[in-house]
Image (cartoon, rainbow, N blue to C red):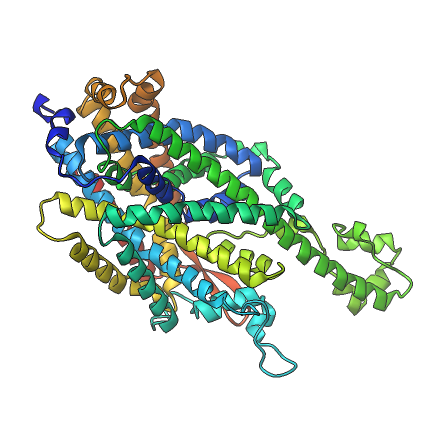
Length: 581
């Protein structure tokens, strides 16, 4: 890389570039992009799956190993060069343009399915304006019988799988459109257009509300959740550490990838947002603030979620307990179950009341089941299922349930929209920086219209299966590859000494040993390990998905057919671009 490609040569001729109105507006936009739906439903699931409180250890370590250094690096290059992701990496070296193109492809892929999730939140938000929430009870065939699919599962499951998704059993047999999902998807894209049509001047102002309102709602849910019966059980369950899980390499890999998704590393959005900063902005403080706030938000949201899941688990366990008590009273009128037996197993209850094998074999006693708060909390719920099934089931038990439902789904919409704005800003900034003579409004309209049409893939009856494919395979490998090339490009092509001079010019001080060692050694090494582990995981087991079986109201584990494999291949398209060096 020749001396005339020094970053410092670029800042002088960017006086006409649009800029944030003030520092607070930028921080709200950056924090709004970083704090997304993954903080609300992916982090709690990973925490539960990977050792509870023990998962916080690899999560915080990975924040220092890759989170802070990569976030600071992306902020710095965007702010100094003041271009989008393609312009930044092409400037550092012409052959690195593929890294920027890959970021744009990823942003388009993720933006496609992310807005369908926002459409689902809109559907639930609209349905919350009812005195009796529609997912509180099963619809009935007649006065005495409910719809079998609902009876076999639950009202919240039925509303999600049948009323909302009208889901097909397999990915192959659900090609027809679900018109309700088409409508909410269209409304979601209209909102995105209105929020972005004037560039950062419009999206920046929206961010004040879109970023702060979710925190107000989270605090309200935290206060409400901690007052519920069973909340402490849920929080204890979350923080009970299983240190043995730290021996599992997958736990560390999932902690690392969660940092990527949560902070938005490799998307190009951080570079795009920081390119509208003033050249002398202290981006080091910004990086530490946003990354730390995002991490603390994940933990706070996790506590809030598990307090409410603990309430739901306690409620279900008590319902089970009451059912067992009635069965026992019918069989042994003189016996009474005490709540202290709530977590007893079936055999322990029989022993408690001196019931012999012949008595235990009666039909009524065989219908008794084990009732346990822990077994309810052990039920794996992740992603959309946590928000649209588990959380909604808990909310219907709240006093003034519609009010809390409106608050919750409006919060999801704000969190999702602020992230969607950041994701798509990558593409808008790259196109405008390329010199194309087109207005921001027209560009945004073309992009939103085209993505709505392509996004109809997710509004089919089988659409949620395709969305799962995109969510699982469209980003991880490519994002890690992009980040690896970014840190290698700055450290070894642009040279770390030159980068340190640029940082001193912007921030006022030369970066310390922690930053330089991270960029040169620890961060690249960690990324290579994550990349290898992710590739091994991709080919270690066959590609499967969970198909909803309406006859049994359960999920069947199915192999992806040809159409699924093709979609997975499409999701990996950014990889060739990121390898174009």
